[in-house]
Image (cartoon, rainbow, N blue to C red):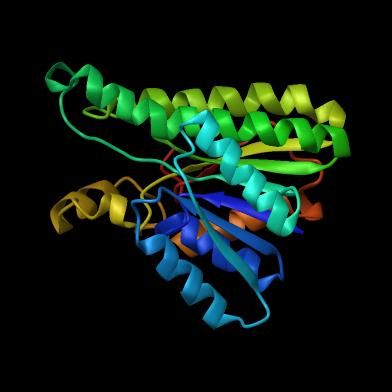
Length: 243
C-alpha cells in the first residue's frame, strides 16, 4: 500500500507520514524543493523504522506540470498511491483591507490549487481501480470563518466544499473522499501565537487543551482504513469541542 502526503516535512504532515510508515505503507513525502526539512524527515522516518519504505519527492504541487512529474516519480518507485493526503497548507493573519492580491494568490495556490492538482490525478487512477481514499486536511475556520483570516478561511471553506462534492462524485467508483477540519494544533503554523493568545482561545475549547499532530494523524489513519469504509464526503471536525 502506498500513501502520498503533501506538506510532509513537518507538523501534521510529518506525523501522518510517520503513522502510516509504522503500518508498513510505502510513504511518499512531498514538499517544495526549497524545503530542506523534507530530506531530514525522510532520513528520520527511515531511521526510526528500518523496515519502512519512505522516500522524498520534491515539487511544487500547485503547479500542474510539477505535480504530474512528482506523481510519475512516485508511481515508478512505489506504484500509484492508494491513499492521498492533501496536507500542504499555509495561513496568514491580518486585516483583509491590508492584504494584497499577491497574498490571496499565495494562499489559493497552496491551499486550493495543490489539492486540485493531486486530486485530479488520483481520481483518475483510483476510479479506474475502484479503490482509494483521499483525505484533505482542512480547518474549522473553513466551517465557521475567522476574523483577520478571511482569505485563509475562504480557502479552507473551498477545501470542505470540494471534499463533499468529490466524495459524492467518486463514491460510486469505490473511492472515498473526506476532510479533517482541525482546530488549534501544536504546529509551527501556530508558533506566532503568544501564551496569552493560546490561553484565551482555550477558554472556549471544552477539552481545555491544544491538539497534537499525532491525534490528527490517528484520525487520518482511521479514515484511510477499512474501519471507515462507510464514511465518505464528510468533514470530520477535530477541535476539542470548540464548534
